[in-house]
Length: 186
Image 1: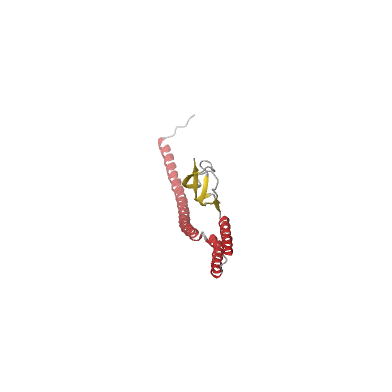
Image 2 (image 1 turned 90 degrees about the vertical axis):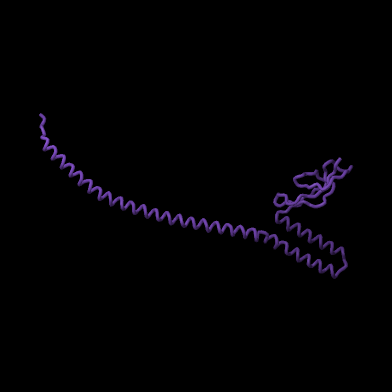
């Protein structure tokens, strides 16, 4: 048993439903509009905070760059300070030796004083990572030796250092001056 619904009754029902739907949409759009506005305000506040953080981070980065440049310049400018402080007593010792040399004719004591100063200077350089290259009697090594000349010698092997003209030096294992040598050729 089905009930027949008249077309007019159905239309009225549909119209009422449409009115209710519009009212619901209006009501939900008002609350949705308020929610959207509050969400937008919240996001704008977050964006402003992030922008402030970005500006601060950018300023910190610029300050860091300036500080790093200044620190590098200071390191270059004053990096040898400890070495120079260690060398100053040697200069004082040389001054005293020269004073004594002017007053005395004792060459032997002057020579011993110079040896002492040389020992102090070598000790100071070793303290700061400088090593001497002793090439006498060793085989020629182009990595640490510079051959100034070749000589024939029956007492030495081929490519052996006969004489060392100038000492070579390493700074913390890096060559800063090769030893200048005379090499035997056969």
